[in-house]
Each structure stands twice: as structure tokens, then as C-alpha cells.
Length: 300
Image (cartoon, rainbow, N blue to C red; front, side):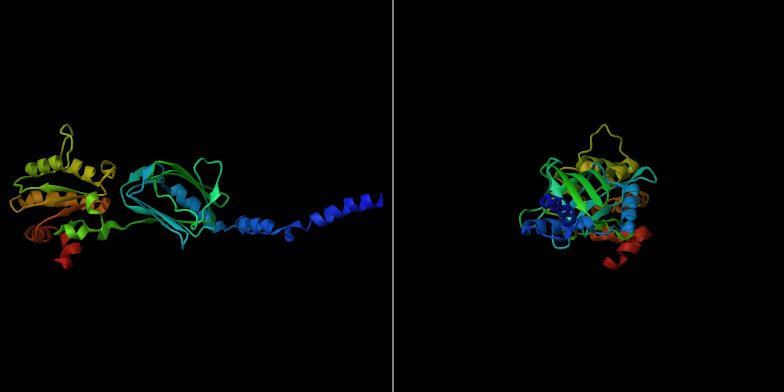
């Protein structure tokens, strides 16, 4: 009986110390691996993440670029638009969703069985579409689609989230040579050749035909600007569209000014559309437009 009572009281006494005792190397490794869950929570970080998710929405938004840095624990989704939850509207302005400095990254293809990401075991899948994103108890849950059209579920622990909205005021989309946009693979650049034009209607018709815009769509400066600055019509093979002009010297100055206004709208709303003119036309553009004179004057 004494032995029995000794056993009853000894087990609780030993059990209260179990967190400090490593029964075997595997148990020690497991405790150290889950140490990220025992970190003190940063209320400021949590509040900041919640504020970002409440202000910006990227659901069902295609990323035109995705990068993953193994050494820095960082992934970046680059978008051409985002949804402003405060203004309740789609904003056509390039931005980046940056997720970094996580303590643990887990992934799954079925949302049930997750495995820890290890850069020495696997290459991280390239993502192109965010389907859902939410945060709960310092864990960021991402549901994304990869470029191979596979659904991927991510759990990202203790991460920092930042949204960087690009300042488009200094963005340049007018050039005098195709070599200026070689950042894009040439086989992913669509080049629309526009011959010499003499009028506004002539210019609009040539652009519409070169871009293969359906004839049943009415075409004007307004529809041209909204079409070119929208990323949705570019989805697919092309990463960039370049409108290459042979000559606009015969175009009336009033039409050139209107055209430049449309080009400036595209400049402020899209990074995937550019315009190429010859040197004489570039000089004329600079002389007619204070905006382009300010941002291009030092380059020519």
C-alpha cells in the first residue's frame, strides 16, 4: 500500500516539471520547433496587420509579379490594382503586398495536412492569385493559386505585413527606343505598330486595329484611356504592351495635346503600357506638355 500511495503522489510532482525535462532528443526538437507559438505577442504588430487587411483587399487579384526570398523570409506580391475598403472602390495604382520576417511558414495543398517549408527540401511555388487572406492569433492564413493552377494554403506565423503603394508621379511611359523597356522579356511584350496619322479619328482607328479591340466597342479618348490602363485585358501571354508610333508630326496640336492627356492618365495608373515616338515627335511632346517636359526634360 505504501508503494501504491507513493506512486500516486509522485506522478503529479514529476508531471509539474515536464516542460523543463526533455525525455528524448525528439521531444526536445519538437519543443524548440514550436517555440514560435510561445513568443510574446506584439499587440502593435497585430493591430497594424488588422488595419492593413481592413484597408486593402487583394482577394481574386492577379499578381503580375511574385518574388520569394529564402534568406530574408520575405515574399512580395506585385499588383496593378487593389480594392480600397475605406472608399469601397477599385484603385488602379500599382502596389506591393510584402510579407516578411516570419518565424515559421507552413504549406498545404489540401488545407488539412501542413508541412513546414524548408528551403533545402523544396522550391517555393510561384503564386499568381490571392483568393483569401486573413489573420488570427498571430497567424496569417493565405489561400492562393500557383502558376501551375494549383490551390495552395499557407500558414505564416508572426509575420510582418506591409503594403507599398507606388508613387506614379515620377513614372515614365514615353520613350524614343524599344531598348528602354528591356526589363521585360521581348517575347512577352506586345508591340502595336502605328503608321503615320493625320487626325484624331485616324489615330484612334489605328490603335484600335493594332490592339485588336472588337469593332462593336465604341472608341474615344475616354475608352482608350480606361482600356489601356486596365490590367484585365492584358491577362494571358503579354506582360507589357508598347504602342510604337512611326510619325505624329502631321497630327494637329490640339489632338496631340488630347492624346498626351490620355497618355498621362495611363502613366499614373499602369506600369505595363508604354509609348514610343521618334526624336522629333519627342521634342514636340516636351514642348507641348508641361507634365512631360518636367519628367522627361533631363533625358533628352
